[in-house]
Image (cartoon, rainbow, N blue to C red; front, top):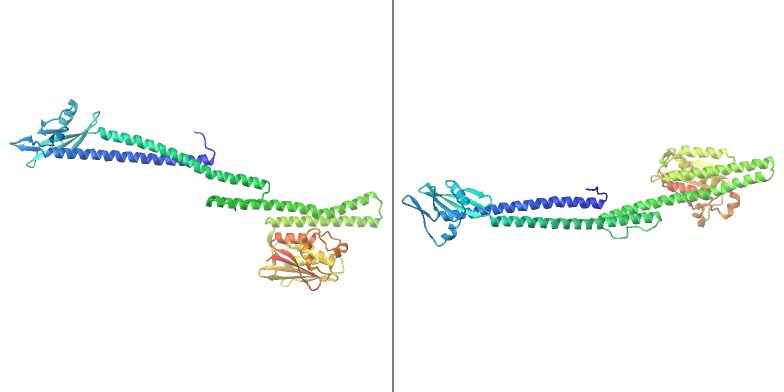
Length: 443
């Protein structure tokens, strides 16, 4: 028997074997019970016939005689009566049957089947005065019983075969229909995921088990689609946000190659190239940190005070007229993300504040309801109400300050992207003076 490779074939084969065993057991049990019942019925008829014949036997002068009655003819056809070992009543029968009946004389309540004759004999004693004086042997043909058992066997086998075929066909049909729906779900899921189709299975009515499968497939496809969108967004952001510093580097290199420049101009060009390269490095590191956070690789914990002190030292290393004020509140504040993530969220906000502030930038940190709240405020021109969300879009700069700030419009977008990947957010808050940016992180 060839190995069955399909689930439908295996389930059908299992159902067939189980049905075969069950039908076989039931068929055998039915035929055994029927044979036993018929055997008991034949024995009962023999006992009844022998008892009826015994009532016609009487003893007279020490010898047994038969008392005739209107029904004796029916009894005499299969009844032998013996006085001692002498037969006083003997029906017409073949010699082999006569010898078998003679052999039962003197036996008590004994049954004997005659092979090839389909006949059963039964010996019953005849008593008088408390002693045995004779024997009655009754015979019963087993042809009708054997015919009944044969017909029952053939009928039960035919019925079992028919029932087995019906079970096989019905099982194959039902399993095929059920698995056909599963196959349709699988093909649709593969087709939809291959073309990023937004359709899902949840809206279609399904049986409970298939509904659970459909829900699982919907969740899996949503995760796959989310992952693909994440990769596409990461690629788009990389290409978009690296375009400006890369264009600066190319432009500076082309200018250096095309004409002679003074040592000071050459030094300025090298410095611009270095700044652009550093900006590219920061963009790449921030995007990679955001990607790790999206994948759950950036989760951790870090003390906020050392992170803020590190940002202060970097601020002081770059000379400038804008002062940085730091109020960390409780020095034991802990963020629910790695230190690198906190630094890359706050660094663009501080750089943005440095470009726009007149004299100072202030950082405040507090813990509220299990969340870590860090605000970055400056005394610059502030953010218009209608631009609080627009400034977080990649490449967006406020027109009034675009010439002065010289940025690529990427810092705030990267900060929000990384904060949201880490389970937090970056928002612009209304302020009476200057700009106020709020960072919400897990505590």
